[in-house]
Length: 377
Image (cartoon, helix red, strand yellow):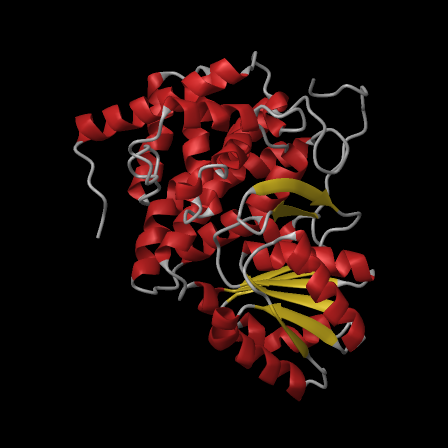
């Protein structure tokens, strides 16, 4: 039931400050000084080479003492506990998350354990994790486990687009898949309690619609710009949609079936190499099927997602021989009692979701056959 406690208060929440632009890391010292002087920098080895060394150099010149914590790749309870102990031993006074979604979600959990501020510096536009007051946690093997909620959103979110533009275009596309779900899900969750514990505001709805409109206007153009590392206005607009608009939208507008089906797909080991937004993209088609979307509306979304090479058939997802038994397991996980699929206004059960998943693959394959779509270079 969307609102079992009959909550009437409306809640909108977000980060205290959001900053985006080329070479923003160069000015990070002036934005971070209000948070402390001795941060824990959570970063994996790859991102450390790409942006971490530069950030440390900038901050040390501004009088900060940085303790680098090496993130090992999975947003798991074990990893959170390990790095929290390291942070306590280093006596840090705030946390900096530098990297992608799992680094960010792990860092938010660490900051919450320590009771200190957090600054999020996203190096990709592949996720809307930076702005939210929650983490998505996985097992050590990569299976979805739970959401963890916090009282406050990040104190600062900084996105250096001169770093983001150098990330693979696949990451931007995954962010588009995640962000495109925002309005699709919020439309169904409008009578449900949001992640802030209240009902969605009118502003949340406006943010969700703006997010979707931005993606339809600029998504393909931004994706192509990313391929040539061209820092264009379209690219900046889509980075903002993927990060800020989607982040505000999903947290205060609510989510529904697309993300629940994503969570179900984490049970299929062959899909563990896919990015979050790639699995969510297929979930969008599933949700539109569940919504009873007409053909024109359904194909509008399919066309955009294919234009940025998002995988929305079983074959493109890398599971061409997936069995009905496996898909029924996905449907069962998506319909777990605590899942967001119950925010849907339509009747839902495991059998309905199973057939929606198969129907999504069928609809996308038929569109590809009829239009002659081919994956771009």
